[in-house]
Length: 411
Ligand SMILES: [Ca+2]
Image (cartoon, rainbow, N blue to C red; front, side):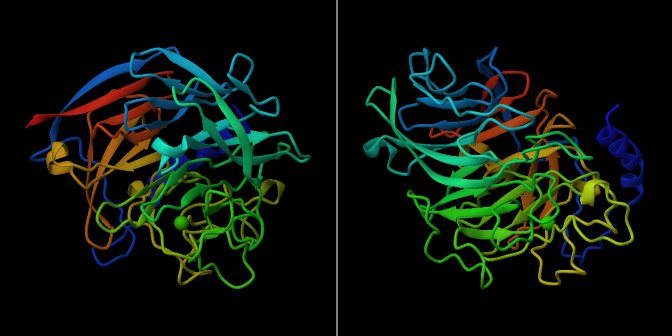
């Protein structure tokens, strides 16, 4: 058992005792998950679209049904509407090879996002770890595809300085906590989630981009309207995060919501506020013994909180903490459309360690008021995307991509 596994095993029992205990008036949502789908829930039909993939990580669906997907150690591919697959960008065998691609730890090729006007400008974006610099970094790479989606060209690295965990330390190996989800918001700007690299200084650093959510233009500049504190990098939208793996935008309001895996407690779903602090600060905890100077795994929900409201009274409050548990909360996406029946407008969250997809009902303020299990197979849910066809697409660590279709009838 690795040191980290031991830490987690010991802490798991503690976490059971240290649920947040929030009352109804508490700003932190602690709803437990019901196994009942609830009244009006849709019947779900699951179809395996692709199998035998190598760690599929993210999916983006074009209006014509072309399905772009990443595999962490191979790169970007597309499944054409006729079912054939073309490898577009990544390792040898891809139409455009990226010799600098780093596959290490949790890192590699992660998020993929289509430009809002992809149909006309043929432009998409991927998040990848690269060895073009030393130390290595995570990058956001812009590519242009040809009209039949069989080749990629014009690689332009629009963000080159997202920190990468270059060497292992006492809490884990190199390449961990790279973040990596990228999504365009309804405002037309690209949101980029990053990780803390097990580096104590990153989340609260005003200039280093780890432990952040960036909001950028298609050329990688800070988007107009970002309001981080004075002295911060203008690309930073929010900071004080651990390792954000999900970002999605609430229908109607457009507010971004993120999902984060807690260390040994407190998975979080958090509505973001421009310039906000997520309250993660894994440094300088004199009361704790912190291996390698990183306190992230050293405490519990009280001594090393995911949202430290004692240090940061104005920190953004999570809307859900998975009842205080740490079960590998990863991707998230809002369900939208009448076909989702009672789940229309609810937030789907993939919980990898627990192997389940959960559906959060949120109140107007974004707080979870009801959480149900979607009753899909128990797998590690790595990527979630809502297709242009209104169906949910799921990437699993088992190497599959599913289409989940809500039927016309309720359960
Ligand atoms: Ca937080």
